[in-house]
Image (cartoon, rainbow, N blue to C red; front, side, top):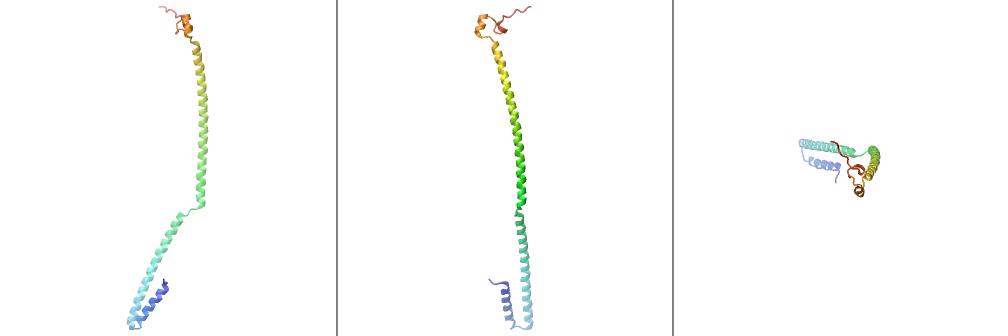
Length: 153
């Protein structure tokens, strides 16, 4: 692919070859026209160059935004880890407190069950057997198999 310098030199040669056959007035007009075209092309190249520079700047900015600062990431990760560790410690502490309360509730329930068991055993031992009720002839509803007393009117 020819370079811009080669292309410009080739165009220069093409224009100057045709100048030999022209009058001075036509030469000036032709050279002015070629100068105008050359200035237009130069202006177009400058515009494209600026547009490309702007695009490069945009892409560099995007790339810069995507680049990650390892120190910032490390700091964020440490902060996240510290927060999670703190939450875990608090959760464990709350769990231990809940377990202690459950142990106390269990001990209380066991003591209550034991007391109720003793009370029921005491009540059951005070109720006479069926054989005792028949031999004494007492009212099973009366305490200790005693006869009910008459009510005075």
